[in-house]
Every structure is written in structure tokens, then in C-alpha cells.
Amino acid sequence: MQDAFIKLWDNCATVNFDKSKSFLFTVANNLFLNIKKHEKVVAEHQKTTIKSSNQESPEFVMLEKEFLEKIEKAIADLPEKQKEVFLLSRIEKKKYREIAEILGISVKAVEKRMHLALIKMKDKIGNI
Image 1 (cartoon, rainbow, N blue to C red):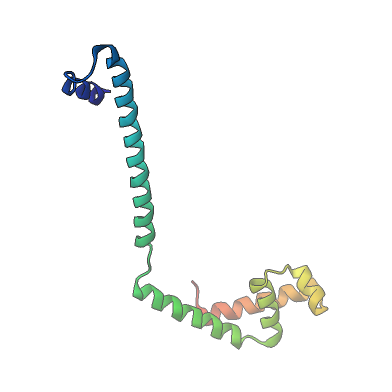
Image 2: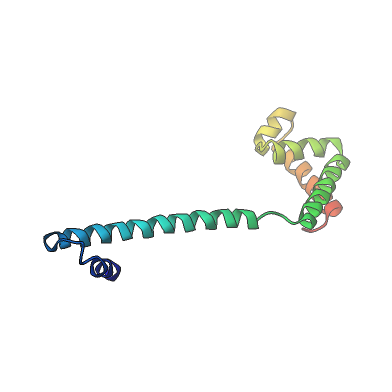
């Protein structure tokens, strides 16, 4: 509001006295809209800055790649029955009941195979 009065003071020679109230409201409204526009620009800039700062370092990319290779090797080394249950559960997101129906085994057998697969995966990859 103070800025609006300062603009009125600076332009008092050109502003008609009868229209000074309208001038103040217009200036105040424009100043408010400019502030809001600036806040929007700042928010957009912060979003892009956050996105660019989340870029992974080359070291992180390398470690991630090595970890994925470890996981793929650990899955490949699983016995066929355990691998089948593990992939259906973890990759295809199937429930144990669905896996049991697909493979024609009991839910307990699925649980046992999954348990053994997870133990072997943990041994190969390590405790993360």
C-alpha cells in the first residue's frame, strides 16, 4: 500500500484530484498482481532447481548399475522353482494364492519357496 501512495506522490502533478482514489486502487492492484506473478516465477524456478539437483552423480549411477547386475545374477542363480515363485511374486505382483493356482501347488508350498528364495537372495546380495 505504501508503494501505491509513493507512486501517487510521484505522479501528483499528472493525476487529477478527482481520480486519485481510482489511481490508488489501480496502482495497488497492479502491484499486487506483479508480486503474485513474481512469486509464481520463483516457485517455477525452485521446481526446476530441485529437479536438476536430484540428478544422480556418476558414482551413484555406477553403483546402481552394479547393484542391478548383482540382483539379476542372484535371481538367475536361484533354483528354477524358487525363481518362478520369486518372479511371479515380486515382478508380476501376484498374490501367493494366485501363484499357487498358476503352478498347481499349495499356498504353503509357495510361501516355502519364496522364503528360501529370499534367504538365498539375501546371502548373494547381502543385507541392504
